Image (cartoon, rainbow, N blue to C red; front, side, top):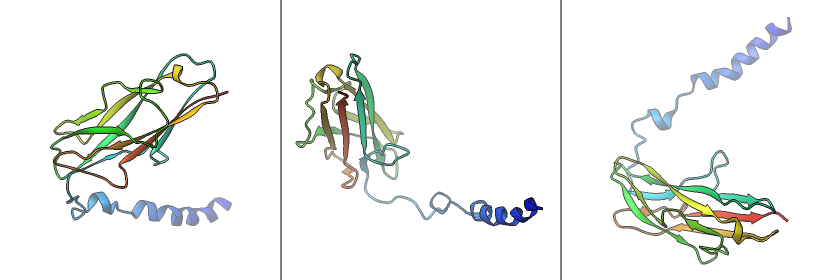
Length: 160
């Protein structure tokens, strides 16, 4: 008897989900028409623009991570630019991190993003130390940089 009482409630809860259309992607009127733009991609599922890399107090192996640069445009014509270390960073290149393939990026024609590899150096951190690497996309030719998503922060730390 209790199952029959719950059935209408479940139907009412599921109906909005089942009947809902994804207007953003199904509506042809929702097409990006702004200037070509690059931005950092958020860390999912949190959707924030920070990441923390933690080493144990005895770790000796370096860690690799990627930051993703998105290209937003009406056509996938590609983009190239630089990732700069923001002056407020306390992490030092060569001591705490290094760009594996350099600090420049190139999004190929036909693609919408590129992952830029960064190696985090365990030997540069003392036990209990934490440093911050703030990365910023530099303006390039033929595209703009998103003001809202132009920075990405990596916190590098070693436990005590």
